[in-house]
Structure formats: structure tokens, C-alpha cells
Amino acid sequence: MLSGCLSVLFLIAAFSLVAHSSPLIPRRIPHETRRAAPFGWQPVRRAEPSTILPLRIGLAQSNIADLEFYLSDVSHPDSPNYGKHWNAAQVTDKFRPAAEAVETVRAWLSESGIHAQRTRLSASGGWLLTNVTIEEAEALLGTEYYVFQNAADSKEHVACDSAYHLPEHVSKHVELITPTLHFDIMKSRPMIKRATRPGFGSGPQIGAKIDKVFNDLAHCDEQITLDCLRTLYNFDYTFVNTKKNSFAIVEYTPQTHNPSDLDVFFGNFSKSQVGERPTLISIDGGVLDSSGSLGESSLDLQYALGLVGKNQEVLLYQVGDEVVGGSFNNMLDALDASFCTFEGGDDPTQDGIYPDTALGGFDEPENCGTVKAADIISTSYGYDEADLTPFYMIRQCNEYGKLGLMGVTIMYASGDDGVAGFGGVCLEPNGTQALGASIFNPTFPGGCPYVTSVGATQIAHGNPVTAPEIAAADFASGGGWSNIFAIPDYQKSVVQSYLREHPPSYPSDIWNSTGKSRAFPDIAGNGVNYTVAIDGEFVPIGGTSASCPMTASILSAINDARLVRGKSPIGFINPTIYSEPFRGLFNDITTGSNPGCGTDGFSVERGWDPVTGLGTINFPKLLDAWLALP
Ligand SMILES: *[C@@H]1O[C@H](CO)[C@@H](O)[C@H](O)[C@H]1NC(C)=O
Ligand SMILES: *[C@@H]1O[C@H](CO)[C@@H](O)[C@H](O)[C@H]1NC(C)=O
Ligand SMILES: *[C@@H]1O[C@H](CO)[C@@H](O)[C@H](O)[C@H]1NC(C)=O
Ligand SMILES: *[C@@H]1O[C@H](CO)[C@@H](O)[C@H](O)[C@H]1NC(C)=O
Ligand SMILES: *[C@@H]1O[C@H](CO)[C@@H](O)[C@H](O)[C@H]1NC(C)=O
Image 1: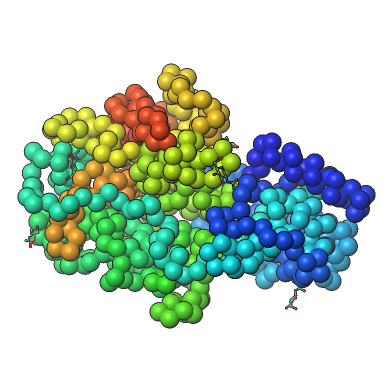
Image 2: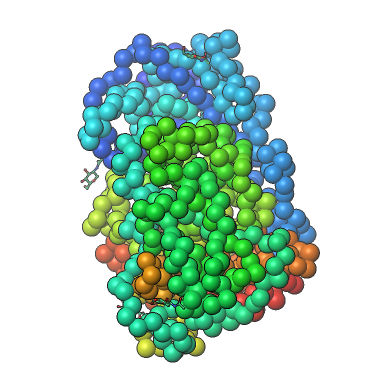
């Protein structure tokens, strides 16, 4: 969570600050650091020392450092516990903050002059609460508080500068403290609406109206259809309709679809499905917003429903009302009641906060543990890592890991801008994002080790559907190395081979060349020129937005086949797919690259690469291999 030389500077500053206030305070380390205030915020003056702050100390979960180990235990094909997923109560018990955490933090507060009668433990057990003056908070946390002002609307917000510090023995029991570095202030509503975050910047790649729609295998290089995809991935499977298998597509308001477009699509490509609809699961007031944008949702749902066919229900998790919208955390809150509160709950700068009392808002408590997680959940939205704080990302990534423990497969599109962030934005040396900057800008949650990240491929222009695909070239498939997450065991050997055999020639200050960070994507699938019905006409749409739900649909068939045989769903697939027998069962992509930030990006190579991962799905081979597992 801490980064390099900046931290050392803060540490020195902390010592000098602390030295004359109390000689008894033990050695402190930076607990959270921030390189720059969020866009638009400037410090204008020191905060008044006597101002009262409602200090909230989020306690660390126990055993969270062993999450990768637990996950591997139920997800690695060589483990005797493969497929023995946990239930929600087991997950909650394993990670609940320990009594030791509460005692350690209370003792430290008391030694610092904040006596036990001034502190209170929150009902969830996840927070210690106390009221302190700014002066007390500055001494306690080795920091300085400032009043920040927003350039756009002159709103003021009190936050501390750059970093805050805790004694080492306390730091390990604390997740975060607020108010500190976080800008826990609601952005003005119109801003959120306009930005439509989370999202792939401008959304999926949408082309002009298609004049002549082909429905044959001869034009798959220009127009992808259901049959093209079935042929590419040898996908011929009839779902058994067990009702046990579940598959969800997530959409964030204002992205929406027009139900009658499903019939235009089915009428042309899958007649027996005319009239079929996804099952709407509304999260935090999510509705089919008739004034919303039609691209992402139409693409995801037409292809997911079309590929799984009429025997398999597709759930639509529609997240967020039409006023504030929703975020990944809002979705996770709905799936796991413990996530709503632990480690501080949601961040108002990023997540929709409910009830939303604005006109037309969802004026009810947020959905918290009200939705049962589907076996596979596919999401074609994302952020750049640089948009979010490490704390926010790590907390959320751990939650994906917990869902994996419970047997859920979480799939995310890897992004459409190669080694750049959404919209082609890259990083400056000081960590800010800008067009024309030169440092690679990894996406989130592509770099979270507990999701399966999906890149994109295409049929080269003029090639038949039977020819090997290449990495997407109409746009650049997102991929590279995270700046936040360490490399998980499951991918170490293939990633290290790539770095050894095809070392990228870029200077180490423009990409994370350490070899110690999580690399993505994991797999890929066709993502160029899907024929999608929008407002009664067909347009080509592409992006990892297409490849992710398409790949998820095919994997859902593997779940169906396993469930019919009384086996568990495939759950978190990464330890399986990177394992020796499985990794050779993908269609390896060997041509292409993922340009961005003024470079050619990384090269596609034999075996795993940071553009197309292990390759695309070869359905019959993977089905057999997964059916052979317990
Ligand atoms: C902090 O002060 C507020 C407002 O006076 C009060 O409602 C709250 O209970 C106090 N919190 C603690 C932990 O004492
Ligand atoms: C996808 O469609 C666009 C616009 O219709 C076209 O320019 C492009 O060549 C197509 N891509 C391929 C790979 O055929
Ligand atoms: C096929 O698509 C066209 C739009 O290109 C639409 O007008 C037509 O109604 C569709 N066919 C059927 C049978 O739905
Ligand atoms: C970061 O660096 C860029 C490019 O040098 C500069 O334009 C920007 O103002 C800097 N931002 C901050 C917050 O220092
Ligand atoms: C590279 O990634 C690691 C996490 O694996 C991180 O600790 C390190 O700070 C990153 N380097 C840069 C330059 O961001």
C-alpha cells in the first residue's frame, strides 16, 4: 500500500513533527499516502486547530493476507479441496476483525491521551469511533490538515496532506482512518451523470449503420454474428436447463437496452428466441432508463442471450438509479452484506450513496446482501488504477477473492486502449493522468489478481473464420502490468517466461518492469465488429466489452455441464487455466500488439502475453478438461 521514496520523505517529516510534541510516541510509519489531491482540489489554508473531527478508524480484517492461499486451495486443480467452495458464513467468520485489533487500537488511543470513554465500537465491529480536535488528530497521525477548495464550485473540504502515520504495531490492525486523505465528498450530481463512471471512457467502439447484414460464415472478418463465434470457438452446446446454473451480466445506469432490439437481433440470428428477455435484478434503483445509452447493454445482452440459448436464463444486474448511478462497490454491497460495512464501507467520491433523496433518485436504503451472486458475473466497465486510491482497489479486489472462495467466476473486460488508460490517457512522472503523457496506465480491476481479465482478438481482414485470429487491431486490447497488485503464484511461471524470452525494450520508468506485479489479461476472445441491433438497425460494436460477456457465456456452458454431473461450478478459474494441463488448451494467439502512450505496446508471443493472455477458448477441449476435474 505504501510507495517507495515518497514514503521515506514523509517518515522524516513525521519524526520532526512528533519530536517536540511527545517523546513517548513509538516509531511511526506512513499508513496511507497520496501523491496529489484529486483533480480540481487545491489546499487553501491550514485547518483550524480547535475544529472537531469525527474520527473513524476502520479495523483490518483478520487472515486477509492468506486470501490467495485459501483461494488456491479451492481453485487449483491439484488441490485435494478443488471445488469445495465456502459458504457466506465461513467467509464472514474467517475475515472478521480480531479482538486483538480492537484492543491494540484502543490501547494506542489511550496512550495518546484519548481515553476509552471517548471511543465507541460500531455495531458491525468494523470501526472504532471517536471525536477529536484537528490539533489532536495532527499529533495522533503525524500529519497536517488543510482546507481544500474545489476549483469548479468553490466547495470546501478538510483533508490531510500527502500521508498519515501510525505506530507499526497499530498500522497492521488498521485498514484506514477517516477523515484523512480521502475526499469523502459527493461530487455534484451532474458531474457524475456526465462522466458515466465506471465506464470504458467513451464506451464500446460503435460504428456506422450496417447497410447489408450478412448471416453467413464468409463475412466473419467484417461482421461477427452468433454463428461466427460458435465456429471460432467450436461452441456447440445445448444447456440442460437445470435451473441450478446462473449467469449474470452487470450494467451501470445510464447504460441501458431497448428490449425490442433483442427481437430484431433474434429475428435475424436466433428466431426461436424472439420474445426472450434477460431477468432484471435491480440494484439500488437500477431500471431500464429510456433516455440512457444503448451501446454497451445491447451488445452484452444480445450476445449473452444468443450464445447460451433459450434454456439458460441470463440475469441482468442493473446497478444504480438515474440520478447518482452506481459503482462496482454498489454491486458488491448487494451481493455480500458484510461488504457494505467492513473497512469503512463505500467511498462517496466513487460510489453511489443511498438513499438518494434527489428528485427521481432511489430513496431507499442501499441494497445490502439482497442479491445471491450468480455463478458467473461478467462486467464490461472499468477504471484506470490511477483514478482510485490503493486502499479502495485493494478492499474491492479482496471482495472479488471472497466471491471466488464461494465459487463465483468474476470476469472483467481488460480495456480498449492498449497500454494506455481509458481514452488513451497515460501517466506523468508525478502520477497525474494526461493525454500525451508517456507512462503506461494499467486498468482496474484488470490488475486485481482475483478477477479473470479478458482481452480482445479479431479475424484479420480478408481471412476466413477458420484462420487463426490475431490480437485486436481495430483498437488495442488492454494489457500490461499493475502498479498496485503483486503477481499471484498462479501466473508467475508464464509471466516470467514472457519477460525472459521477449523482454520489452522500454525504459523501466515507463512500465512496471519489476516482474513482481500482476500481469493481465488472462484470456481473450473476439472483440471486433459484432453485429448489434440498436433502435431497430444493425451497427458494428466492438471492444473488450464484447469479448468479455462472449467468453463468459461459453464458460457458463461448462458450469451447466458440471452442475448436471453433480459437480461444483468452475469458480475462480485463474489457478486452473494457468496450470500445466489447461494452459495448452486455449487457442494461442501469436500475432499483434497493444499500442498506447506513444509506443507499440507489448508484443503478442507464443504462450501467454500481456495482450491476449493464454489465448481464446477452445470449448470442446476445455469442457473435457473441466469435466475431468472433481
Ligand atoms: C461525536 O459527536 C457527535 C456530535 O456531538 C455525537 O453524536 C457522537 O456520538 C460523538 N461520537 C463519539 C464516539 O463520542
Ligand atoms: C469493422 O468495421 C469497420 C466499420 O464498418 C471497418 O472499417 C473495419 O474494417 C471493420 N473491421 C474489420 C476487421 O473488418
Ligand atoms: C432483421 O433486421 C432488420 C434490421 O436490419 C429488421 O428490420 C428486421 O425486422 C429483422 N428481421 C426480423 C425477422 O426480425
Ligand atoms: C504533474 O506533471 C504535469 C506535467 O509535468 C504537470 O502539468 C502537472 O501540473 C503536475 N501536477 C501536479 C499535481 O503536480
Ligand atoms: C510496480 O508494481 C508494484 C506492485 O506489484 C508496486 O509496488 C510498485 O510501486 C510499482 N512500480 C511503479 C513504478 O509504480
